[in-house]
Figure 1 (cartoon, one colour):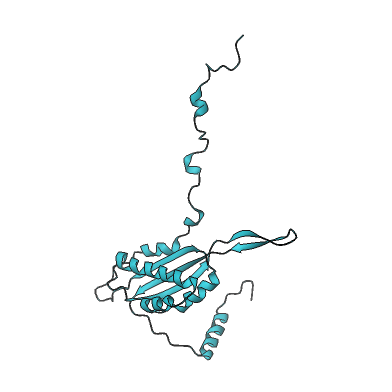
Figure 2: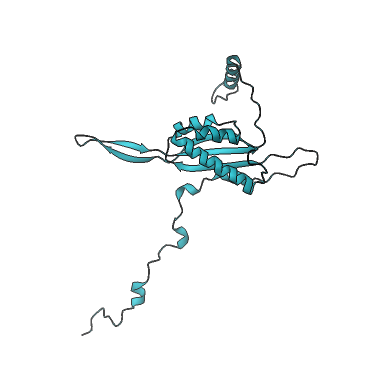
Length: 199
């Protein structure tokens, strides 16, 4: 009598080998938010060479911070406040602002300022102004908020992104618009619309 499955005939190397049924390339290991990096990719833009009589093209620095534990609406007010300022004016305004978002934006501006001197051949770190400054919606996480009598609600753990663009040179002088000029621009925008399925 011989057993159907004996230990002598068993190949332990096959039993103890790891189960690699899927190829290693099919396993997703990176973060899902690493795919969209279009804002930082603008730093790699290569412009055509300039003519000798053309003015020197100012340096442009794109920087951002993603997934900030802060509301995008609260961040927008701070981002709009420093838009069009020089880098020194913006840092001074944010230093004396006691909001949480002001401290975050100040850190991002200092990082962008160092990156401008180190990687973008900017000679003077104070010769920069904020051309673009805005916030965006990050990833919202759904969580349960417990109520009385066994009830519950759904709350959001909000996150936001902050984007900034620094340009070398002095900020352009903006002429303040009157209420009539703003109304004319608004009417012109309405006239320039493309209404689908219309006459």
